[in-house]
Amino acid sequence: MGDNNRNFILAATLSVLVLILWQYFYVLPRMEQEQALQQQREQTSQATLAQPTPSDDVATPTPQASGAEAATPASSAGVSPRVAIDTPRLRGSIALRGGYFDDLYLKDYSETLDPDSSQIRLLAPLNSLKPYFVAFGWTPRDSAVATPDAETLWRAPGDATLTIESPLRLTWDNGEGLVFERTITIDENFMFTVTQSVTNNNDSSVELFPYGLITRHGAPEISGFFILHEGLIGIFDEEGLQEIDYDDLEDGIATKYRSDNGWLGITDKYWGTVLVPSQGGGFDARFFRENRPGVDVYQSDYLLGGVTVEPGARASVENQLFAGAKQVALLDSYEQAFNVPQFDLLIDWGWFYFLTKPLFLFLDYFYNLVGNFGVSILLVTVCIKLAFFPLANKSYVAMSRMKKLQPEMVKLRERFPDDKMRQQQELMALYKREKVNPMQGCLPVLVQIPVFFALYKVLFVTIEMRHAPFYGWVQDLSAPDPTSIFNLFGLLPFEVPAFLLIGIWPLIMGVTMWAQMRMNPAPSDPIQQKIFAWMPVLFTVLLAGFPAGLVIYWAWNNFLSILQQGVIMRRQGVPIALFDNLPFLSKNKSDKTHE
Image 1 (cartoon, rainbow, N blue to C red):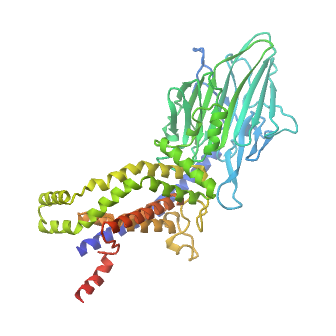
Image 2: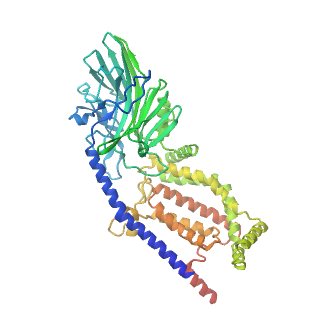
Image 3: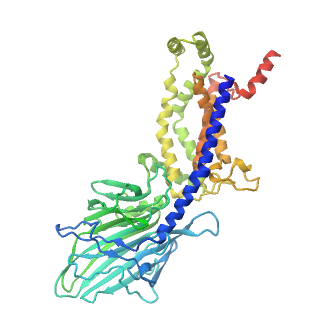
C-alpha cells in the first residue's frame, strides 16, 4: 500500500506540474497574442453599420440584413461637433454629425480599485479601440425621400448640455419640405428618452419608419462561465427571453422577431445597453453579425411600423434607451415607470429565478442594515442553515450512525475480503438491524443544492457585489482573494502569476472542507478514500480563482455545518476524531500502543 500511495502522490504532483507549465508556456502567450490581434483589428475596422430598411412586399416592414444603406458614424467622417452629457451618474457626449450616442462613461464605477483608475466607458466612437454606439432615425418607404443619416449635421443650441434639468433639442431640415426634430431627456440614473418628430411642409404625404440600433465592433472579453450570459438579449411576446451569445450568430444571417411589447440590446456581466421601442404598437427586431475585414460587427435593432405624415402635419414617436449599470432595484423601478416587461431579466438570474431573485432581495435587505455586503453573505447563510435545520439534522444523524457503524463495516470486509456480493449482503443486514438508512444522509443535502446554486448565482452576477469590500485584505468580493501562499501572503517581495494565486480564504475553505469530510463516514473502497482525501486540495486550487465572496460563503457554510454536525455526533455518542488514521500520525499512535 505504501508504494501505491507514493505512486498516487507522484502522479498527482506531475499532473499539477504539467498543468502549470501548459498554462505558462502555451495559454498565456496565446492570450497575449489574441489581445494584440484584437487591438489591431479594432483599429483597422471599417466604418459602416447596417440601418434597418423597410421591405417592399409587406405592409409592416421587417429589417433586412442585405441591401441596407451603409451609414458612417461621425468619427470616421472627420471631427464632429458634440453636445456634452453631464448628470450625477453619467458623463460623455453626443455626436451632432449623425446624432450618435457614442461617448458615455459611468461616473460611479471604475475599472479597478486603484483611486486613479479610469471610469467605466460603456459607449465609444469608431475611432476608439472598441467602437460601441447607439443610433436612432427614420427609414422612408420611398428611397427618394431624404432622411437623417450618418453625415447629417444636426443643429443644437450653442450652449447646450444634456443634463437632468436641461433636455437637448436637435433639428435638421432636409431642404425638401421635411423638418426633423429629436428631443433627448435623461433621468438621474441611466434612462434616456428619445422623442423623434417630423413636420411635413410638402403638399403630399410621406411614410416613414422609425428605428433604433445598437452596434458593437468586436466581441468584448467575457467571463466565459456557462452560468452567465453575455451577448445579445431581448424580451419578445411569443418567444419570451432570448439570449444569443456572440459566437452563436452566423455571418450575415439575421435572427428576427415580431412583437408588440418588449425590448432588446446587448448585455455585459454588469452593464447593459437596451433599446425600448414604443410598447403596444408592434415592432420588428433583429440580431445579426457581419464579418468585416479585421473585425466582426454585432447589432441589435428594431423597426417600428410606418408613420404616415400628412401635408402640414407633424408626427412623433417616443422610445427609451437604457445605458448603464444593471442594478436590481433600478431595473425594477424602470419596469414599473416605463411599462417595460420583465426588465429585471437583463440580469442573468438563471433557471432558478424563483430562488435567485428572492435571495438577492434577502442579501440586499441585510446589506442595508449592516452596510457590508460580506457580512450580509454571512447572515443570509445563517438564515439558510436555519431554514434547512430539520433536514440537515436528519442528514447528520444518519451520517453519525453510519460513522458509528464503521468498525463493524471494516470487520465485514475483513471477514469476506474476496466476496463482494457477501459483503453487500451482510452490510444490508447490518443497516437493517441497526435501523440505518444510508440514503437518509444524502436526500436532505440534495434538496438544498438548488438553494446553494442560486446563492452562488446571485453572488456571481449582481453588480452590487462588484468592488464591495469585506474586512482585512479582501477589498473586492467579486474578485479572487488577492493573497497567495507562494509569496507567503505578501511577505516576500515578488508578484505571483494569476494561476498561482491561492489565497488565505481559499485555504480556510479547504481546511473547513477537509474537517467536514473527516467527520463523515469514510468510503468503503480504498481508491475512493484516496480520491476523497485529495478533494479538499483540488477544491482549494479550483476555487482560488473564484470571487472571494463565493469562497467566504463556502467556508462559512462549511464551518456552520461542522458545528451542527459536531453537536449531533456528540449526542449520538460518536467520537469526533479529526486526526485519526492520518498517515503522518499513524507511527506515533502505534508507538503509543506498544508502550
